[in-house]
Image (tube, rainbow over the protein chains, first blue to last red):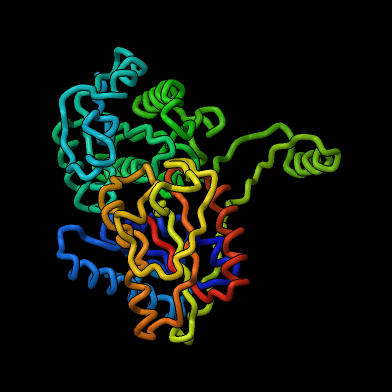
Amino acid sequence: MVKEIERAGLPVVHICTVVPISLTVGANRIVPAVAIPHPLGNPALSKKDEKELRRELVLKALKALQTEVDGQTVFEK
Amino acid sequence: MIKVVHYINQFYGGIGGEEKADIKPEIRKGTVGPGMALKGALGEDAQIVATVICGDSYFNENLEEATSEILEMVKEYEPDLFIAGPAFNAGRYGVACGSICKAVKDSLNIPVISGMYPENPGAEMFKKDLHIIETANAATGMRQAIPAMAKLSLKLVKGEEIGPPSDEGYIPRGIRKNIFREERGSKRAVNILVAKLKGEEFETEYAMPDFDRVEPNPAIVDLKNAKIALVTSGGIVPKGNPDRIEASSASKYGKYDIEGVTDLTAETYETAHGGYDPVYANEDADRVLPVDVMRDLEKEGIIGGLHRYFYTTVGNGTSVANSKKFASTFTKELVSDGVQAVILTST
């Protein structure tokens, strides 16, 4: 899906846990996530801290969308 | 006696489904699960001395640690052959099988083999490194996969000559071999061309690799005025899954209106995905599709706006062809709705 979105002309950032799969699939902007069943959350944290964690990940994804990339780029943790 | 160590996931190990996908690796003596059939197919010259079982999520979330932990376990049994799977179209399982096979091959220098459906991401990642028997996309193909894996693995361990992929049943590895042919190249090329012109079947001698890469689009310049859409393969749907998106091998995607929605709650949203433990997403679907945070950012003026609809499907054994079709269809809508960028989340 990520490749088709990109092909249609929209910049897209892939937030996912298993980065090697994302690289294989062909995403260009990749933000590593927390865990497979909760990529943008962590049930071990309080609601407030968890939302803060999610906000940081989304902000990182937005940052990736504002960054020019030349080929596949992983925006590390 | 050929000593074999077999690798399987928590499901085939009989430990549990997705709720147990986070278990750490363990090793047991003898055969477990599909190892029984494998034992029969390998015959009397080989013995499965031990079976490693590891949770698919644990492996994929901790690629390096899991690989080195398992490698240590395998070493102790001093195997002559290492077999992983078959993983069919299970993505995390395929990645685990491929990673551990490659590590065992590199570090112990013994033959390794796995089995996967060609669309498994593990196949694409590791087909150049090891022999991966081509299997069906689901466990119904076990009866065909096991004998093929056993046969090729015995050839490998005995040092016999390995034929081309079409003869042995493995996924092409991109290796070229020089052979003698009766007719010279120019004649064969003309024959192929003539067959092509006649519309007859022909087999190329030089298959072109399939490099389907898409160049990245330019970055967003004006985030404050950009409309961003959320898309997920994590199967988030309104509670009750109104369009009945399948838990695996999805044949459709959903488009849902989130106007006025500021938070996804356990009462209103859930996941339809059958390939990961749904507990956390069902408790709070924002953990997969961050609507709550996007609304905050919208209110604070950091982004121009969150698109009124999100698009969702279940990325669990879903064919590449379907995924392409879904995304090329809904991206047209996104473009005509004036969306400027997409955040795609995957589990």
